[in-house]
Length: 240
Image 1 (cartoon, rainbow, N blue to C red):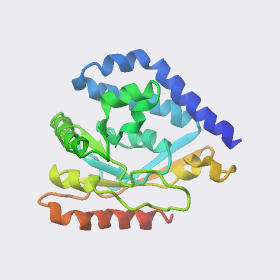
Image 2: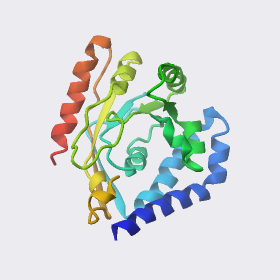
Image 3: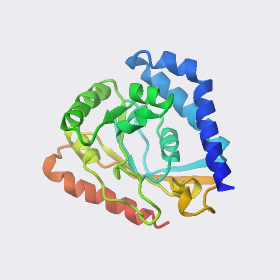
């Protein structure tokens, strides 16, 4: 059953992409058209996958997003559904910062490299270039999303240690951090189906969008305390 559910995810993701292919080609032609691309990805592509799999977002906001502001979005990351769910959480357009390996995926990789900020964590030059790209995107009024755990870990890991990207970006660009708890994604559609053949299935995807954490006036010396603050917040909240 779970194997079929896994296959169904790829059918939905792929067919949704193919249906929207002409629209995505047009909207990725110019970088300034990204907000329109984001709207389609959020309201059509993500919905095809989430609702097609019987996954219903149930989002609780501690405080609202303000139109025109840029935010650093950060959540725990244990499922491919996390990407679609993050699109549903924020009406304000943002770009993902992610690993360059995703470029290798057929069709998806083509659009990914045009709309996301890619980073090769083994390349110092790549990490430097990310800052230039991020500044350009922020100047366009966009936010940024980074999953601070980086790599995806197995079910035995509740919350992996955070990498530094979220906290460098947020202090360097003075963006508020918006921590989020994705409470059900691993249970509904985990990365690691092979660990247990009886996991996964339709249901609610609860999200708690916590109070925004201001980084105004904070710098390099504050990053570790920020990291601990966000990590402890999510660690304690994931017990639900």
